[in-house]
Image 1: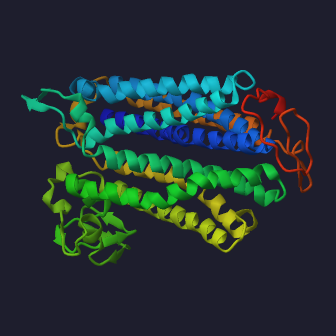
Image 2: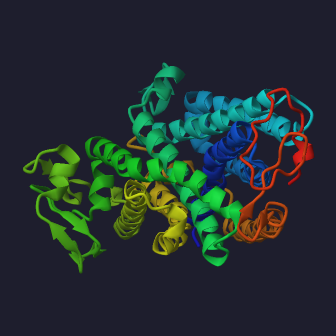
Image 3: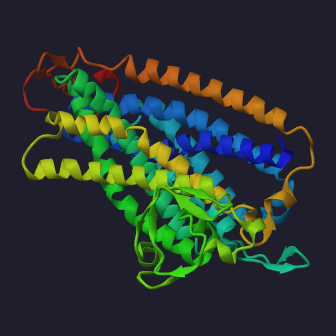
Amino acid sequence: MPDLLAARAQMAMSLAFHILFACIGIAMPVLMVIAEWRWMRTGDAIQLALAKRWSKGTAILFAVGAVSGTVLSFELGLLWPGFMEFAGAIIGMPFSLEGFAFFTEAIFLGIYLYGWNRISAGAHLASGVLVAISGIASGIFVVIANAWMNAPVGFELLAGRPVNIDPIAAMMTPAAIPEALHMTIAAFAATGFAVAGIHAWFVLKEPDNPFHRRALPIALWIAIPAGLLQPFSGHLSAAFVARNQPAKLAAMEALFTTQRGAPLRIGGWPDPDTRTVRLGLELPRGLSFLAFEDFDAEVTGLDRVPRENWPDVRVVHVAFQVMVALGSYMALVALWPLTLQLRGRPVNESRWLLRALVLAAPMGFIAVEAGWTVTEVGRQPWIVNGVVRTAQVVTPMPGLVIPFAVFTLLYCFLGVVVAVLLYRQIVRTTPMGEFVSTTEFKTVTVDGRPSGGMPPVRPSRRSRAFGELGE
């Protein structure tokens, strides 16, 4: 394996591993905060158990995400020293702000985990809210750094070197808003559908289990709006690509020839040698309209791009099709519960919807991986679009295939460890017996006494009884 390919493969593998935990770190704290807030409002002990279970999962995934994120930071310097020399002063600000947000998230996550029965209920909930806010901010700052790589601004070139650097202007790159919006919504959609799918699976197996019946609607609260908004944010992002990265758009749509009224392709396998697409469906003039809101707009094809500047058309096109297909499925599934609610039917009673949610559980994360493949492979051969080529900044150290193989095995091992920990801490220890006797719910009051089938009691804001309510 050539060293350039090994370096790119190692970076891609590290990013593919880390992005899963980054998505969960953005959205999972929102779920645990909602569950705790509902417990404070209703006194329903199952909501408290949900908050504690989800906070344990968040802690496990946060720890692994911190490790994999640190590895990525080192790899930027070790694998791409030329890139950091060129761009370090330009994108250092979003990375430093991301570090600040990360440490804020870590501090308040620690307070949240160890603050049960130690601080007031309001302060504890506030710490969870700060975990959620800092997690979202952390993701946005990292995406802004990547957005700058796609649309570099905030500097001038003098003899191939950046001068007159303006870090604030660099952060205001035109790619920042569409890319950060699309990624943040994707994180909520992926996590929301994953959590909803897991609990839908258990509702199918144990229809009378109140723990999963309570958890499913909370997960849908973030899955539904994210799933419905994602196509619109995707359209905004694609419109930016059409205007600023025409080669990437041409690869996404396998458009080899510049034309007016360009068709929108669905599926197909592109052949760069013959510049044709096999087995694909075409919607006449669809691409021109979606990219420029004009059915007769001209769309730049790969024929206007030097062949040495083409991205890998096959990889980009297939990844884009996968992302769009899975996103469309999740958007349709997100509409389903809304139609049931309008008809007065409970979501938990529709077995077909539960099956559809189970099927959707991994789709959000697969779509995120496919989307990042489009973003990164579609920018090649540039590491800084139109300015610095990837081959120019790779480390000269030989034998990069060895660390690539080692890190691949390490990530596989970490993946197995995470799966085992989540199963033991979240799935296997799911509370049931203390909350349910067949179909009768039990609600726990502030003083810890079960109230049977009585209506839930709202706990006092001064209560320190978090620990007394149990798991």
